[in-house]
Amino acid sequence: MDFLAIAEIFEEMHKTNSRLVLIDHLVTLFKRTPVNTIKKIIYLLQGKLFPSSEGIELGLGEKLTIKAIAESTGISVKEVEENYNKIGDLGETAKEIAKKRYQQTLLNEKITIERIYSTFEKIAKSLGSQSQIIKLRLVSSLLNDATPLESKYIIKFLLGNLRLGIAEYSIIDALAIAFTGNRNNRKKIEEIYNIYTDLGTIAEILFKKDLQGLTDLQITPLKPIRPMLAERIIDPKEGLKRANGKVALEYKLDGERVQIHKNNTEVQLFSRSLEKITNHYPDIVEAIKKFSIHNCILEAEIVPLDLVTKKIQPFQELMHRKRKYNISDVILKYPIKVFLFDILYLEGNNLTQYEYRQRRGILQSIVKTNRNNIIELVKQNVSSNLNQIEIFFRKAKYEGCEGLMLKQLDSKYRAGAREFLWMKLKKEYGTTLVDSFDLTVIGALLGKGKRTGYYGALLLAAYDKKSDTFQSICKVGTGFSDYDLELIYNELKNYVVDKKYYNVNTNLKMDIWFTPKLVIEIIASEITLSPLHTAAYGLIKENFGVALRFPKYAGKIRLDKKPEDSTNTSELIQLFNKQVKRNKS
Ligand code: AMP
Image (tube, rainbow, N blue to C red; front, top):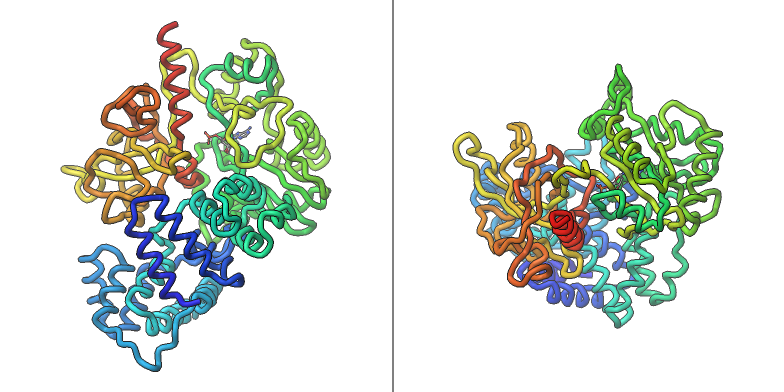
């Protein structure tokens, strides 16, 4: 399949501000794609080569990409850099340079999606001392044959910032329309996707066998499933009521969520967003290998410990584990503890349909028979008494936890669902609202004075699933240390776009716009109605959205969260209503 046709569709998608038009383009693309290519197209649209669970990343450095553009067009690296500085986007730069140089000759080999994919695969898998030279050669030879438009998208793919940033929901919508002829089937596809998170394989099956074929996909060890999520509550009374008077309480640790998969001798670890993180935690892998179980899927929270006191440390300390080299030194210097809180699969049996209390019982007996230094069961209590819950909450806080998770005793494990079956209780209830929100950065104002060269304030958004839009909720300019300012600037640099992103909804004018990618944690004292902001616009009061009062950066970039995992508009409405009720009482 010709890559040029795909690049032209990408270009059209890039221009549109409408989600429906974007989906139409995707449908056209899927219908034109032959069956043996559909998987590849889906992964590329998701900005990867394989399902994330394979842990093979493409991401090529900017420097090497600039060199490749220079080499393939015969101009100097300096000239490419000058153009890049002017244009601000390396894909666009490659296109502009290629426009001046490109000549269609008989020697040009046509670029097909298959060729792109196999070159990318070679790039991703080339390791060792010669790898930079090999990668450079591979990219230059591809660019040599590419038209200007193709060059643009090749570069974007290589840098891992295909700024089309198509949400998975839109891909699923388009799959439903293209292969089942009915958009309403998106729900069924999403259900399967929750337990079998390889969208490429799902697309291929839909193409070959329609919806029926998907029923063969089951929970399998080594294939991550979408994690079950919790709704927020602001007092334990509500938790008890929703759980019909009796509820399980678990410590809510502030660390990194991990799905631990074991299949005989192989152990793999996946993050909350289902990336493979096995290499960060060889100590966990070793411990699980020794478990007297053949296959299982476990869920846990990993927390960092102080080397000397062995007390729980702030979540950021886990950053040290993300290093690629000398991990054995890092293990000794930065110890961790793993607190198991769920089991989803055991010895060939899918346990997600078991009730919480049964799963907890199984987990308990596993931990009992597999004692080791770093893996424990999360502390738990079952209670029907408000006082008891309050005491357990304070104890959790005292021991360095964020608060409590309240779980309904008869709840099944609902992959990918955020419901009141699990409830998170984080804030100090009883005091005024100081709650935390995970919000996506969508824009920024340039800094002045001390902040020149960085951003002065960030525009933040909540996510609205129904419309698949990021809706502005506040600007934040306080709580940042100099270190934070630099760190955030460098992260956001990768996501700058030339105009307001297509699924960003705000009336505010900003100096800089971003693809919604980076999630940060904010604390605020109150949710207010606002004529300026668009979050939950018109849903509580006509012509008003909601905003956060006195927002402050809480010191955390949530690299573990996808933008679609940001605080969502229905959560905000619920919180607002509870706040009104409490202020009245
Ligand atoms: P939040 O990130 O604030 O939405 O809270 C949900 C997160 O809390 C989960 O994704 C887990 O990473 C974490 N967590 C900590 N302790 C527990 C627990 N006992 N049960 C479930 N999740 C937990």
